[in-house]
Length: 432
Image (tube, rainbow, N blue to C red; front, side):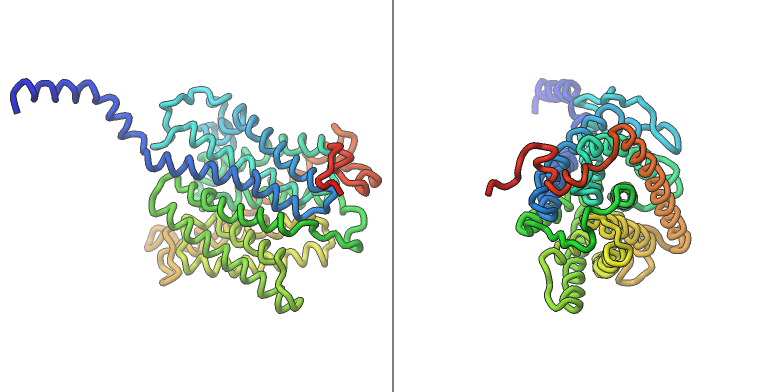
């Protein structure tokens, strides 16, 4: 190589150095995976959850559920842009973030969060903010005014979801304590489950419940939505690793195992108890397995995931029986017994199975002299209790406040009998 060639190579290296540094800082593989995960998590709400819930209600209310999912996705996205992301993920204090990212201020094409674009991180977290209030639809389905639903969901996102998100994932007080919540046992499932339960109690039961049968109108739609949720959950849990690595791979593996175990466990219980396995049962057991593994998915092993999935199928099944058959609470689509109870169970299980000293059931959280299972379980119980209590109190206040703004939360008895599709949207899901 001539001296001239060496000089030219040296000059090119100097000129390209800034670009090479930027390329090294931004990880293309991680960025590609989180782009994919973001699409998967949004896919869980639209169309996954919309179809899952839409099939579970009566035919006269199917469009109302679909419209609610679309409306919540839209309003939650805009609130996340304006306030939610900044209050959740900026430094602030132990209780809430600050406004330094108001309207995504300071986020440009080259702004990074770790080794991925911050715009991508903000969008990924936006999809979580979308699905959480959407899950609550199941608690008040078929009877809440559309205006009430919009106001309550918007206020709830800012005053319930955002603070708890900051506590757990944004550097708040639960994060400082060391709470283990990989993908949303407290932030998503307990908040949505408790919010739905409080809404069901405040609104009261649907007219005719529990004496009048109110079966799902389209189980084909529900099973289609359930399948979309199962696939989308790989982005929900696997994407929460924020990298294309072993943590993401293991999170997806244990998610699938728990979902499978939850589905089969629920199916077998129904088969023994009622003589036949149902499509609704296997789909609900699958969702219970997914919700329960969510907080633990980045910390536990495949054998532990099997135990968690089986426990989810058993505990959530009997929680559903308790809520609907014994206490006669019309949590219409079983949000609290599946998501709320599953989130609680999974958060506790994360504190146990993350230990590295459990033999074949060992996880990836702690071991030796660093921690004890008892200490971690104490942190997990604190997180569960704080999330449950805060969500219950604030949700109750917001429902009452919303009722004052909209002259009552519920449609009238006649409107409920006619169905929300025609009453609220002047449309029908099916033309007979």
